Image (cartoon, rainbow, N blue to C red; front, side):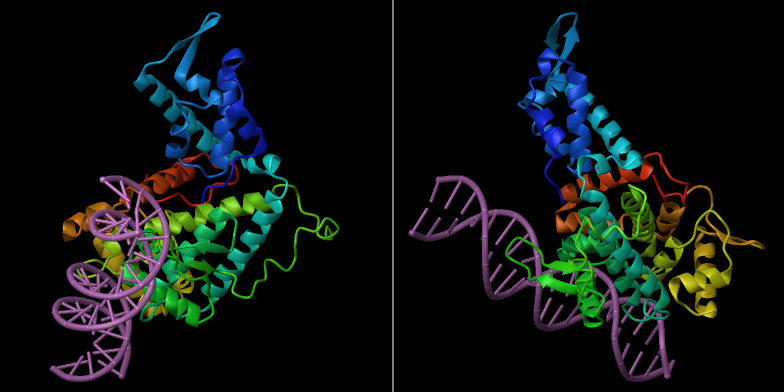
Length: 366
DNA sequence: CCGAAAGTACCTAGATAAGT
DNA sequence: ACTTATCTAGGTACTTTCGG
């Protein structure tokens, strides 16, 4: 979901950068593009022509500018882009660019938090039958909604399936089940090459209180909404990244529910009851799942409880079961890997960026 | 203007795991 | 041990876009 550039950055993109400080102009463009969730390919497509990207094409030699080589230009852009993405992730720069952003981020973060709270309270809904797949799809929809800063998002079944680490048909039926139970609603059917639109706000709760200037009854510090959105995004992205893995596929794999269980653990030890409550399972079922995860070598069990080892062992475990690479094969089949890969790399750059707030839990694998 | 290509949803059949 | 239902892959039909 790429948004238009903020005004400052759009102006910088058209600025004749050769005469002034070209690197500063480039920085203004990249920051805005990263905040608007552009991808590297989007900005790279403009590198040859846009006046504001002069710094990519040439470098300053005393009072003149000399052209860079093709490879050097690409590496300059890649390096600066990486820096910009990390900067935006750590500093919540969007607040300054877009005065409505904080309020919108606050609304969507509150909605996602409500959905997650309600889901966590629905014990048993996510452990039986298609429940594990349902919960993954719900979490992915929450992430997409946070990214788009909108409760309604376009979500075709393939993209959803790949992000959730499940099959496309499974994702489709999960959507139907979630809709039937009132967790989500389809706002627009599929239209040719475009997927259907779904909302995690079936009753339209978000749009009722608009960003009214007089509704300042609850004073919140500036940037609170943006910060909460960032924090939720980090938590939920880590969760789906942890769960979507070959090890948690079917057959000799440990299954979807085991993946969801693993995604709720961290390197800090947890008690059985905590884990059981997180996934809404009975203590006996949770115990069985934790034992299987421990047996596979991805969790450690001692008298303080269950925790993850310092290094992620999911891939090693999958390899020893002979199911390494399943998800990648599936992605290959769906033939949209290239597209998804770009999104995912931006997301990982986000995840690995230095955190401004207190460190939560570590993202699983780098 | 027409056909090819690409992307999506829906349907069906087989395999596998969970529940009783 | 048996029944049920869930997941997955393959195939089909429909729509839009693009190139000759």
